[in-house]
Image 1 (spheres, protein in one colour):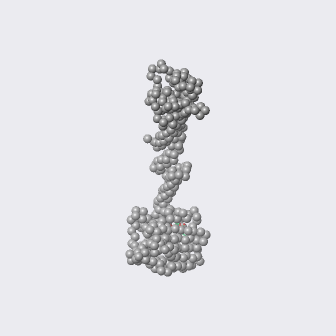
Image 2 (cartoon, rainbow, N blue to C red):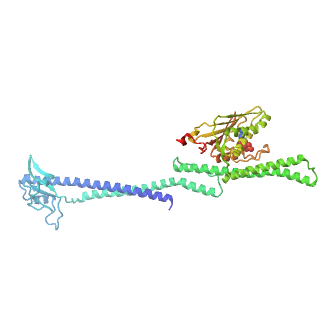
Image 3 (cartoon, rainbow, N blue to C red):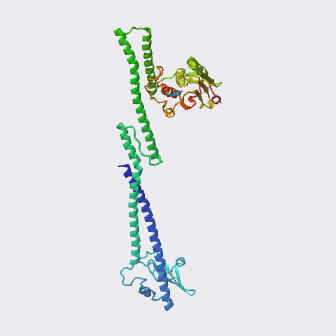
Length: 462
Ligand code: ADP
């Protein structure tokens, strides 16, 4: 059964219950009130007729005949007259005009008398009309009135149901429309058309679902596109060194070129480039598969930073770039894989050196801005340069694997550096982010500081 039908049925059932209850309640109330009204009316009529008779005759004898004439009692010749709703009682509490369960002459209890309507004139009481509790028999006009009201209620009920059905159908269709849109879009995605957008009609849960779907579809499509691009670019970039090496080897084999050390160096550089590319790809695929193992050990951050800075100081000097290291004192040791973190910092420094002009400045720093004692603190390592900065349209994508075959790229760069850096930092439970403006770029690595057994915190010893 379709969701639309289920919802419609649910609405219908609900409105059936509500309308049914309302109709039954109001109908019952009207019937009750109408009967009450009739009873008071009839009892008054009965009392007035009885009073008129008494005032004229000064006795109750023969009052039953008079009431019959007034059609307030059934005629005598009726075979089995229905029980009457009222009896007449005289001042001695004796029944004058009877009906079941009373008989003529029977003495009625005072309590019953109090509930009746006294027949009086000028302060003198002649008798009382008591209700027997028998149901009133409606005359045809009254019955017709009740029937009409009845019919009106049925009609209102049916119209109400039809309106509820119509609204239910409309509502169910509009509620399930986003679901239908999503199903169609998901089928399209399954067929390979990854870029799907469904309209967002509302801000409720279904609207949120549609928005999440659109985001997912866009992400999947972009990831797929960048994977394709990356494969194409890698293939392209693998071809260049292979062409160079192949060309040299052929010429050397044919004796067209002499095997000089310079020529071997060129070939070796190309092989190294290939090697690095393959290494980077392997690191990334290991990280993807969750198989990149870290060798964690308590490490002094200041020593690590100094080591990395030392390795790049010569190159910075050659480019006349001032390489500064600023380390907050008393930083705790952190559990990390120093070789991998050095690789990340090295990549950030290489980039900074590449995008910073002569006379520029690069500063590496380490500090702990949060309260590490709680075990939630983070250690921030950052590499800041005052170079060209990253264009705003590029910034959101720099950590993606958008490998681009860039002819201007030096042999040292695979173009996957930041993607690898992100994987390694995240494996350490941290995260990496980049900020950039006209005054250069800043990359920050936030590493969690875990409470280790060797370094119990105050919290632990309490
Ligand atoms: P690659 O540097 O080989 O292109 P990366 O993944 O290391 O690959 O960097 C991705 C991109 O981020 C670079 O191509 C560059 O556009 C940008 N980038 C990274 N670091 C910096 C920086 N310090 N200054 C300016 N741009 C940068």
